[in-house]
Image 1 (cartoon, rainbow, N blue to C red):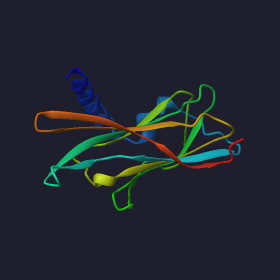
Image 2: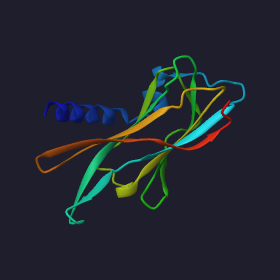
Image 3: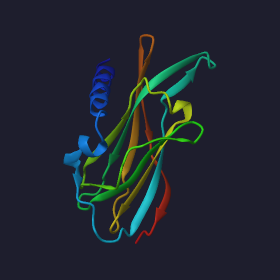
Length: 169
């Protein structure tokens, strides 16, 4: 019960942050984008569920989604080139970066989708394109879904999966 309460409180906090851009909301997590060539790059696919069909499709549960992108490097910045949200049909719903940003070592940014925003549907997903000047720990990207049906509260995590890696040293 305590975990559900904490998760619901955290979701409300994330929704409050979603009124600005990623760059505004997480300015303290960002650093200058490296000026040299980006020798390593990749993309991560993160399945998310803004809605889930239940009871043989007779009931739909809607969930808030918080996508967290973590720079797993202790020493190097991680450049995020794109954070894009797609719906069940594979159509891009929203792009969250106007231009590339760089995360400080061990820093994190988040993107939040409110419970009422069901544009993604049951097969929504994010694609996160990243790069770095040299070898770096692959970013950790996860999505937390939180919702309720009746008196029950649900929370689950979906992890990002690599779909592209270029230029590994």
